[in-house]
Length: 124
Image: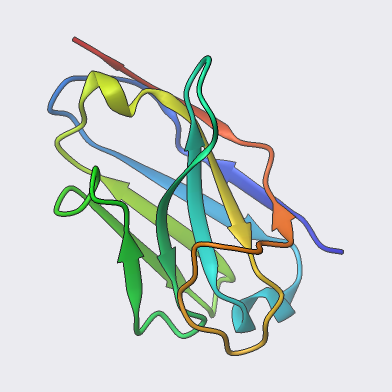
């Protein structure tokens, strides 16, 4: 099955930055597209960003476009979410996920493996 482990969450002031990491346990994960999602208290989980297996194409939710950057390093089987200009409404638990579709493109749906999540809190 494989595992994903997120890290890099924390408390930051409005306007600050954080970089989340998502480390995969299996090298085969380097062949899969990856996504980031978030869930705020009392709300449904929502899509944040996605990247193709090679990192050549990306997709972002409108709410984070221009502020967040998704990337992945296949040699390290690790994905990243650079978050800049953070706002209080970005406060949520952030999850990474992979879709086991070899050499797949960026997608917002049908992810197979999820991490445990990392808390991001943005203070006003």
